[in-house]
Amino acid sequence: MELNIALLHGDGIGPEIVDSAAAVLEKTASEFGHKINFTPYLIGGAAINAVGKPLPQETINGCLASDSVLLGAVGGPEWDDLPGDQRPEKALLGIREALGLYTNLRPAKLYPALRSASPLKAEIVGDGFDIMIVRELTGGIYFGDRGFREGRYGQEAYDTEAYSVTEIERIGRVAFEATMKRGKRLCSIDKANVLESSRLWRKTMHTLAEKYPEVQYSDMFVDNAAMQLVRDPKQFDVIVTSNMFGDILSDEASQITGSIGMLASASLGDGKRGMYEPIHGSAPDIAGQNKANPIATILSGAMMLRYSFGLAEEADRIEKAVNKVLEAGWRTADIIGSSERTPLTCTEMTEKIIEVL
Ligand code: NAD
Image 1 (spheres, rainbow, N blue to C red):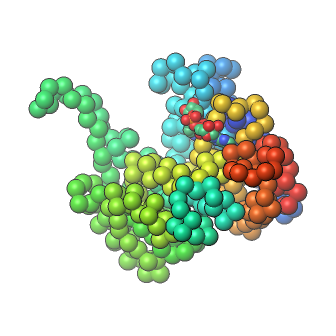
Image 2 (image 1 turned 180 degrees about the horizontal axis):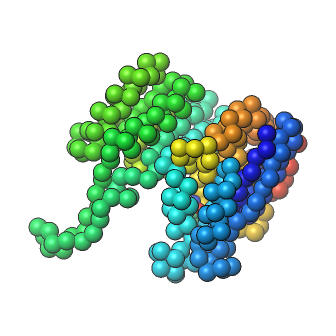
């Protein structure tokens, strides 16, 4: 298979981790007889510095012409004083919109080898957990009607949560399909005891659930879900939820794995093309020092093979290689804990994974 992949390095540690993931993808492709063509495009602060805007049209065109997109991270103190609509982070919403990406898949996996990195007690995490959060990405309160008006207590600001049946159905379908490929347990999270939009969400999910009799479906209120994630994370297989609830719960879920440098994500739309990126930011505090953990971006590359190209065996190979390197005790500085070994650099960790591949 020939894979045309757009690389968006971005800022801070972005270039280091994207190059690491590209090297791992290259190695995997050669092992399985595929050919990858990588084309880099500018995004974020790097694009501001080069051409004066965070998301150049050439980048949008390049991503649209590619089969899939791998992104590092954007932003940094150098651009923090720019007005909101000119900041590097603005490019993220723009590129998601341009590519029609309405689903965010965020696995929160605690590897057995990294049990001690979790802030949760050993008896809660057991031998690790593996949750997939499916978050709606382009609807709800982040995109709803907003503004200022005269209210009961004078001037007030408002934001609106609105979801259509169409939007709920399309994210629901993605979640049910993802659940069928995993442990067949799906929990839909809402606030149907208070919000009208959540009641429609729940009703629509129930209708969909009838089409997936093999899936063990449940509902949960978001406040309870926030508690259950730290009380008993192993009860969850796949979670589906709205944009804002997903934003909050996926950060909570990533925190209980103990390492932000390990977690991948995928943003998907209707076609095969997706945008794959680590959940962390550009880590300006360690940028350019070869200290970053490349694993989140490497695992994002594995997700790309699985979800955009249907190359499950190739994706498994990368995930197993990461697991093996961790089981062997190799660590970058962010996950070293109390180990007496010297932490690996970003390049060394990448080489270890490639060696196992
Ligand atoms: P951050 O995720 O960049 O960093 C938080 C902490 O985690 C830092 O101490 C950092 O060194 C560490 N860290 C993050 N990734 C790591 C890795 N791979 N290996 C080792 N350590 C890692 O979050 P922040 O400091 O809040 O934000 C920094 C910049 O990134 C800001 O400009 C922010 O807007 C931007 N940001 C971008 C994205 C994105 O591009 N998707 C997401 C979040 C934040």
